[in-house]
Amino acid sequence: MHRTYLAFTKFYSTHMSLLRSHTPSNVKRLSLLNMKRFTGKYAVRSGVYPSVFANDAAFGLMPSELTLAQYLKQEGWSTLVVGKWHLGHREPYLPTRQGFDEWLGIPYHMSGGSLDNHVCTYDDDQTWWLPLYENEKIVEQPVKINDLATKYASKAREFIEKNTASKQPFLLYLAFSHVHQLCAPKDGNEQSTCQWAGDGGKTFGDAVEEMDWITGEVVKTLDLTGAANDTLVIFTSDNGPWLAEQSCSGSKGPWEGRWLANNVDQSCTACPHDFLPDPVEDRPRRCRLKRPSPGNENQWTYLDGVHCGEDVGLGSVWEVRGAKHERGAHLKCCKLSHFAIFAI
Image (cartoon, rainbow, N blue to C red; front, side):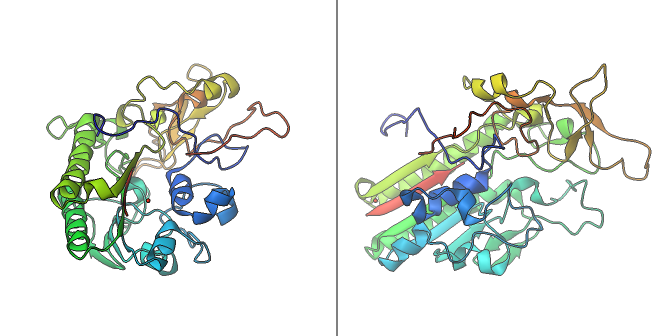
C-alpha cells in the first residue's frame, strides 16, 4: 500500500476532554463511524466518557446516533464490520443494530477476557472468556486467536466477492485487534507471559506482519474482482503503543509525544493494564497488581511503570494531574462507490 497509496503523516484525533490526555480506541472508533462528527460533534457528546467501555459495561454507542454505516445503508449499500467493535456488547448496542448487515469479531479489547492457557487476574471463577461473535451470536468462546487472522481475511474476501458480483456498493470496516496486549494473567508475570514473549519467540513484529497479511488479502481481492479502481481504501492507525506495557507494548518508532512529556507532572506514573501506581521512595515508578497473588493475600506482584508523559499510546489507566491547560485551550481534531476502512 505504501508504494501506491497516499500517505498522510499528520493526524489529529478527537480528544475526550481537557482533563484526560489519552484518546481510547472506542472514542476514535465512534468518531470514525459517527456521521455527526462532520458537523463538529465530539465523541464525548455521544456519551462515550470518561474511558473505554469495559467488559461489564451496561451501555454503548446510543441507538439514536447516526453512524456512517446507517447512512450508507439508507443509500442501498451493503455493510460489514470485521474485528473489534468496542462500542457496547449488549444487544441494543451491537454493530448489527448500528447499521451493519454483518459482523464477525470480538466485542471489546483483547484484555477484556480470558483465553485458553491465559486466565485473567480478575477472572476468579473463570467465566470471563473472550468471545467471538458472528452477527449477534457467540460462535466461539474463548476465541482461538491462532486462527483469527484467517477467519477475518476469509470473511472480508467473501463479502467483497459477493457484492462485486452483484454490483452492490459496500462498506467494509475492518478493525484489527492484533496488536493489543492481553490481560494480566492469574499465573505468571505479565511481562514474560504476554503474547509477544515466549511460545517459540513470537514478537510484536509477527502480529504486525499478520495484520499486514490480512490487509494484503483484502487489497488483492479488490484487484481480482475489478473493484480496486472503484474503492476508497483508508488505513488508519489507532493510539500507538501503550508504552506502560513495556515489553508487551510494541514500539512507538520516532513519535515522541513531547507535549505530554513536557506538561505532565513528574510524579504521575502510567502502569500496565490491571496495575495501579504504588510508589515508594527508592522506587518512584513502582506499580502494584490490583489484587494479591492467588492463594496468598499478603503477596503482591510489582513492576515498574513509566512517566505518564512517555505513555503516548492508550494511557487509559491514568489521568493527567497538573497538566498545563490555558483557559479555553483545546486540542483540535481532524482525523466514497466502495469503502474499505482499516483501523488498528
